[in-house]
Length: 355
Image (cartoon, rainbow, N blue to C red; front, side, top):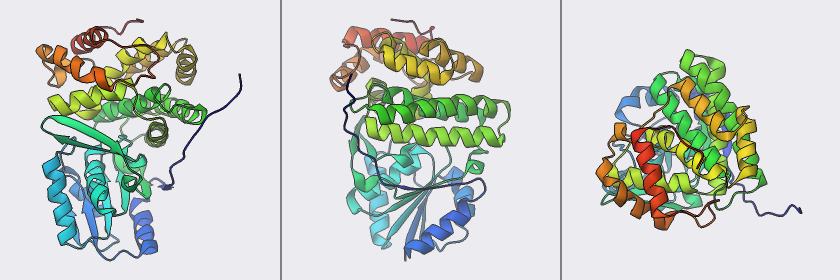
């Protein structure tokens, strides 16, 4: 078969090194010559942000961060940035923190330097998300892509085991969804496969020892690859399901992705044998589902949506919200009954099947 595809690569500067976040950030800020810097971090990570930013002058420290970026939070942060005359945004934290920086950049065009402390991957994508009236909207705009990302595995050492696992499984979801997302191509599939390999190596090491350097480095490297693949390939069935759950029912981002992933993989694998074989090889397993489920067992990963605020009575409504946004390119056609069945299984935490 002839090889023919179209691929876009996003332009971004990456600085990766353990213990080098403050040094790399100071050098990057000096290179840019910014005059008024806004540092965005959650209250919980304010100390980490202060340490990372110790070598630069900060005009505004901003901590009003919330999951799924509620529109009112975005408007307030945009106003604060405008009033302070900000010309550079620095976000230190996970996906919610990066998401708020993107919300500001979406309307202002301000450049972003991202310093991730989780495996969310938002820092390497040009995808934004906002929640209004319990509905999450997402879009793509190159203006929200952080121009520089500073990765320091040591900044993830304080991430507890449960959150490390959930966040790492979220990164795996980026990889697996990229195998059959609307713009999947040989390049983003290759990135996704390497991301799976790195995450499958790193996460069990972290589970055994939170400060395992190799584990943290491999997981952060894998999370970056997963995000680059996702940004290129687009949102597949898995992400559309999780965006609805997060926006409509205020469910935690990483745990929702970690729980839903094996059910979507089981649903699609038999209809996408080449992708499934590549996923299996990346896990070093006989099948894709076996590889993911084995890793999930090792990590004691999140199991059931009922543990994360989804009521069983909401499943039918959720399926109806999801159906119109499932990509037509999904390997299997999807009905509302399929979605209800998948959600019931994920809600209960029953073993993912092969259907």
